[in-house]
Amino acid sequence: MLSVQEAEALILSLVDPLTRGDVEIVDLLEARGRILASSIASPVDFPHWDNSAMDGYAVRSEDVQTATADQPVTLTVVTEIPAGVASQQAIAPGQAARIFTGAVMPAGADTVVMQEQTQREGDRVTVLTTPKPQAFVRQQGSYARVGDHLLPTGCRLEAAAIAILAAAQCSEVSVFRRPRVAILSTGDELVPIDQPLQPGQIVDSNRYALMALVAQLGCEPVSVGIVTDQPEVLKAAISQVVPLVDVIISSGGVSVGDYDYVEQILTELGLIIQVRSVAVKPGKPLTVASFPDPDDPGLRNLFPLYFGLPGNPVSALVTFWRFVVPALRKLSGLPSPWQPTYVNAIAQQSLTPDRQRESYIWGHLKLVEGYYTFAPAGGSQTSGNLINLAGTNGLAVVPLGDAAIAPGEIVRVLLMQ
Image 1: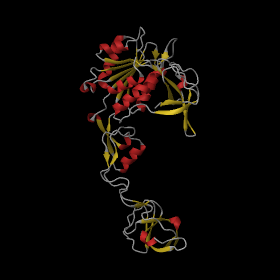
Image 2 (image 1 turned 135 degrees about the horizontal axis):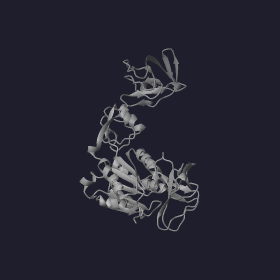
Image 3 (image 1 turned 45 degrees about the horizontal axis):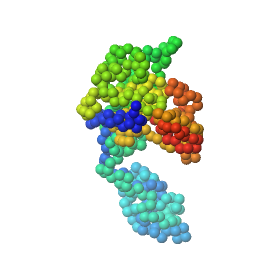
Image 4 (image 1 turned 90 degrees about the horizontal axis):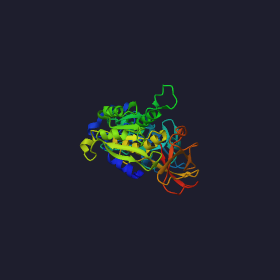
């Protein structure tokens, strides 16, 4: 049985990120959540020209060096410059231009006096304070210059990044394709959500949860459906999706019961079993397998990685958050670190450890007066209790051993993303 850290390191070593052959060009409006495949260099200066950061008056700083409320300086207003208009009127000594936020600075002016520090009468403006030279002027190229890198390779394109690309007039963008992830559930006891339950049957909720999580990570889920506990059926289902996907995820059938055939089938298909169990609670029975030689980079790019998750719903989700998420992040082209995100929180209740396994306790993470607090979800913390996962957002990590984490002590919490 591997430790959590050993399993994580081994799994990440089996993953090769998408390459240049996995790039596609998409319209910027379709790029949200995609991973940038090539860094973006600025085609223009930002700002494009010197412009005003304030409504006020564009002046020559030397004209107002002595301006105060007691000894103001009066200038002649020779032009008005709204945003979007480049004035042809240069500012000479003793002159000013009425200017608005975002408007291009006129030739000759180097400073903006905000309108609240002036008095206007006709074509004359009285300056009541001494502005610093360059005050309220956004200098051309002060944010970025032509050729500067705006966004790096591996950047996930969310709203801010898309705004930058739009400002740089990138109507299309090169992104990595979405990794394809096949998801199947195993077990004769499983039924689809639209079928009435008979005694002993269980609704296949895992597949829906895993598909949602895969999509949330920016990958493309491929639903294989429910596969019965028949070795030949499971073998056929896995074989069918091997050439179509980058990762295969199954839930159920990875324990040591009489009907748990996953490892047997994977071995028959020529996979190398890399992980059989991990010292984690919940989620001890975890199968990870690779096709067929993990040390050959050429083959690693041709065959999918296989994750066999436990069938109990909480175990399936915990092992996904802890082990599958880092693998999919690395595969997608995101830069390291790929590991889950943790925060330190103040435990609100005693958190009991397991002597042999690292425990993950699901509950509610809150920010209270600048500090995170963590309280376990109510009800039983058992791997079959899917119901009390509702509304939870963190997994408290309790190291294996004998020492409980007491109320008021710090606990490390994995964000359920």
